[in-house]
Each structure stands twice: as structure tokens, then as C-alpha cells.
Image 1: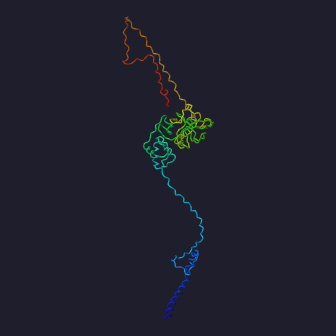
Image 2: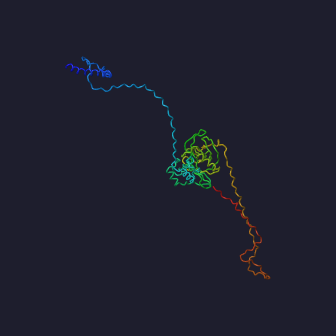
Image 3: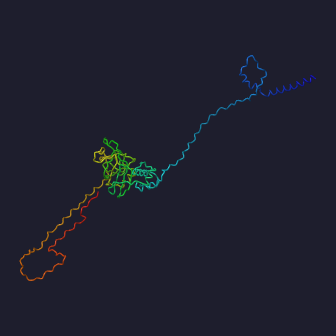
Length: 388
């Protein structure tokens, strides 16, 4: 009986032991997993490590350290081609260019093509219009300029010959009158008033002469002068000229000449021959020829010594004065036959005679000796007054 009880107790214990040993053979012990951690902690003195590890809360599953492969050096980046910027549309001027060109043509400021392109000729015409109308001359058609185009100022001219040039220096504009009518208005730039060194080493001021002159000589094309390049110059006083230039600002900037744009100067050159009247007035940096003002002894463009031959007008024929008409000669009066004065004596008796026939009333008997009437003076021999 006791033997059966012993077997009953020992057999299950033996089986459990064998099962535990088998399981331990296939599973690493907790001590192996955490051995490193335990070994790092020194043992407590005076105590022995238990043969059976104390029970503890289950630890997390061990983590296996991951070994990353060696980093691969990054490949050199290949520069991508820079994309070309897309062309942007040029903003328009903000107004109807063709309509402005037509309006400026009607007002005598513009003579180019009505093509809707705001080129240099259009800008120059706008500047002239702005000057006459008292606006800032920048060549840009803004709201004020557009309003002035609807209600423009009519320029007032000085007057003179039917074909003439007037330069209003205060407004810095040139008027060309042809056949008694205003033909063109152009912007100019005259003397700046600054000092400059002359070719002889002296000093003069950049002044523009005022008064009435005529175009004395002209040079077609380019003229290289001491003070710069002149295009199609038209000289009206010594070396002072109206000429084309590459620089025609809105303010006085020349050495004394009257600058035009090159296209405007060429246009005027073809219409203003030698002898054309030139009138300059107004302005600030000016002088009157003969006044002795500083800068008037040296021409602003050329000097007489270095002036090339230029076209010279033929001298006008002297005015022909018709000879005075001969004074009419009046013949001496004829005296009729003397008639004896009447006397109180009774004339002797004479035989009756037949009275001579008398002329009808209202007629005058012809004189005995007739004198020819003086010849009439022809009207084409009378002197005529000459105009200015």
C-alpha cells in the first residue's frame, strides 16, 4: 500500500522533471539572456548567488542589434539644365498710339507714319506738344497729355515773311511757317548758360543769340566742329546754327546753337534754303548780337577760319529804280491878236459887211497855233515800295 503511494507520487514528479529538462534544452535560459546585465552588477558581499534565480516579472523579449550596412557615398548630383525663361509680353503704352499720332499730325507736331508704334519720332512730337501746352516734357502720353490733346493750346507766333523759322526759347520749340501757314512744330534745346573752353584756350558762355536773322550758309550732312558733331547745320549768325544732334533734352543744353533731332533737322534742311528768315526770342541764356555780352565773340559752332566752303546764295540784284519821268513841258500861252481898246469916239462909217458866222454856244474856237499834248507817264515806270 505504501509502495503504491510512493510510486504514485514519484512517477509524476519524475515525468515533470524530465519534461522540464527537455524544455530547457530547447530554450535559452533567462540567465543567458540577461547574463550581461547581471554580470555588470557586482555581487552583494556576504551573500551567495542562489542556485535558482529568484522569480521576477517577465522581461521584454530581447532585442537583436541591427547592423546597418556601410553607407554608400551619395552619387554626385547631375546639374539639371536651367530652364529658359518664358518670354513675357512687353506691356503696351496704355493708350491708342495710332490715335495720338493722328491727332499730333492734325496739330502739326508729327509728320511720320500712322503705324501705332511709339517710336522716337512720336516721342519727339509728344515732347513738343507738352512744351507748348505747359506740361512736363517727358514724351509720355499720360492722363494730363491726353486731356490736353482734346483741348490743345494754340501757339501764338510773332509774324514775319510767309516762309520763316521762329524759335521760342522760353518754350524750347521751333515753328516753321511755309507759305504763310504753320507747317511744323518741333522741340529744340538751346544754350545752357554754362562756361566752356574755346579752341584758342579762352572761356566763353553757352548763350544763344536773339533777334532777326537769315540763314547765311548750310552744310549738308555731317560737320565735325570744335565743340562737337553737327548734322545738316543751317548757320544764321557767325558760327551759331540750327542743326541736328543725337542729344535733344527737354531743357537748354547746347553751347549756344539750336539743337533739333537728326530727323527733324533733315526735314527742315529740305525746306529752309539760304535766305530763309530766322527769328529767335524769349529764353534766359541769351544775348543780343553787338551788345558785348560774354561769349558773343566766339561762335558756338564754327569759327570763320575753319569753316569749310558752303553754299553761298547769289547776291540779289540791286533794286532797279526807274528813271524819273520827264517833267511835262507847257508851251507858252498864245496871245490872241490885240484888240484896240474901245474909245468913246464914234468909229467912222464903214460899209456894211456880212457878219462872220459865230460858233455854237458851248464850243471854244480852235487856237491859231496848236501845241501837242504832253505824253502820259507810263505807270510801270513809277517807283514801287519794297516789302519787309
